[in-house]
Image (tube, rainbow over all chains, first blue to last red; front, side, top):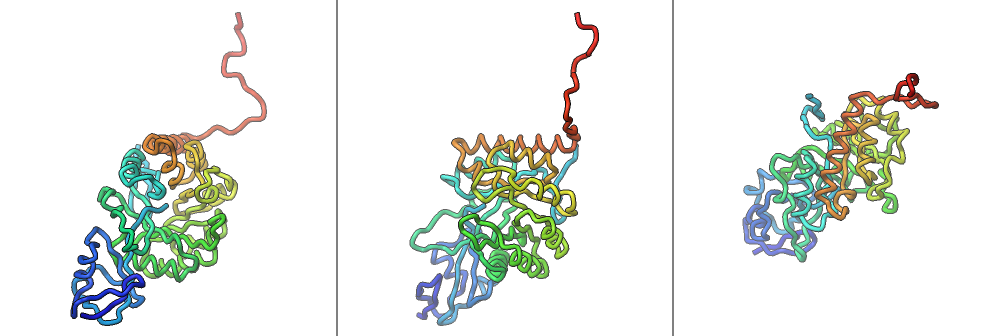
Length: 67
Length: 254
């Protein structure tokens, strides 16, 4: 196991766990989960390929009601 | 009659755009969007709060509706560009309602930061719809850097005060070569009709519908008002006269 930070909170992930797998575990398999990894926006097409590394900082966002 | 609104090459049959904020439930929002006939709705982008998970708003919106993410919450150009890129990377459309608002009391947009962000986003391939004070000079600058529309506020967000900045919006409409979308401050359907009569290409409404006693009925009312205002604009509105002229024959009185 290793640790990443998701929205400011530490999160344990398995070695080699992908972004897609993490989103799934967090219950974010919806239509849009928006991800920034270490300050860079991550393309949705890459969620299933990008493996998380220890210390990665993720921002996970999504569309919400707004005007 | 074919009277479609075209923004950045995409055609819309409806000239009413809806914000999705402030509804009591997503079900009510969905029903109001349906009653409004809107083909484009705005959404905000926020970090997920894992302590208070909420439902996914996009699952309440039909696939064919264009989602227009906004950059609300951003106070600088850099923040807005970051949020737009996050939204696009995650699969939202590359259309962005650009809002750069440093002032919480009146929620007025920062013109300098808005122009800077617009320039960067257009260069990066975004279709940019900037929220702005109705400044005709700024509108031309935003047009020159490649914005798809300009979106002047009628009055501050959520105030429902109507076309308080009417004269500036009128000049913008006269000079613009891109669609002018009046956004924010429209409180009643008559305000929307007035904006359309003035020559606005579309109106964007949120609070006035979401906070009505019956949002679905109000959505329909705004739909009719936007259509009426547009039809009147195309029909040609009479010039105001100083003195009366009788509508009935002046002679032959019995």
